Image 1 (cartoon, rainbow, N blue to C red):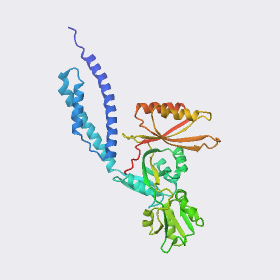
Image 2 (tube, rainbow, N blue to C red):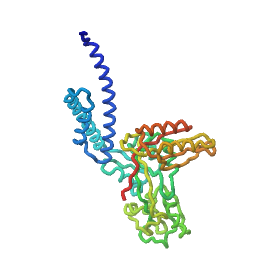
Image 3 (cartoon, rainbow, N blue to C red):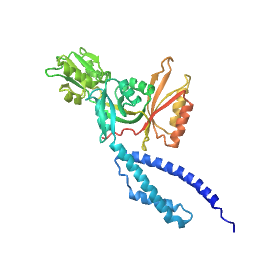
Length: 372
């Protein structure tokens, strides 16, 4: 009988322990993704039925059933520690008070989107007057999150925001959609007969094109935001001035609604993106936003976009922005379905990069689900 070498056995155990550490680290990484999912859905950490099934399943993999009791006890310990890790992650997330940047003053549609997205979380709201001020507050680390409008169902993409997302170091970590109802607001005593000048954000003015077609004598003045326009009219108390904004702004600045719901499209929505400095792992992420540029030659864009089709990914949006200094060449902003943890999606992204001269993933996040 060959004599056992204790040192060699221990060396083999050390090798197995190293493999075990790698596997446990991978498992705990997945546990943190589960924690993110449970946080987003408001689910409890403990799921006793699931835990029991996992323990039995792992024990069932054993060739030597004599180890069954020991392995079950080990798995219970692993699951207990995983639950503790989840609870700690959720506790830290719930205890933290976030600093959140908002475009425009109180009463804006961005303000509404912020409140809806961060409902149930603690945060301090900070208002900024320009898109660039908002996004730079994320880039320099002053703010934890920011909310910016990026697309309207009637007027399309907000080009300045697209450009800033490329220029600044930040990531999209979520989105929120808000139904937009634009109203003509004025001070006490104002009416359609007295209004001569109307302030609003350029998007607000565009969304009410049909109204202005019916009232061509009213001067349209682009302003910082819809809510800032309402604030301006409230301060001046001039019956010849009006603002296009939401009812929330009317209530906040004590203005009356002279003409309600004047946007041309009654089914009018704005999509807002939630910005952070670093990407966030979201277990149930199903939407990717990226920027690409391709060679300025026949078929290059088609070949790149065809990769999504061939791999079965749905392209949700495509926006183009000119590349400064390169006449008739463009950056393309793409929204597509998928999760970057999916091996298939990883392959698609590698293929996209190989067919692009520039590629930047802006974020992988959970798409907004409208509640009917």
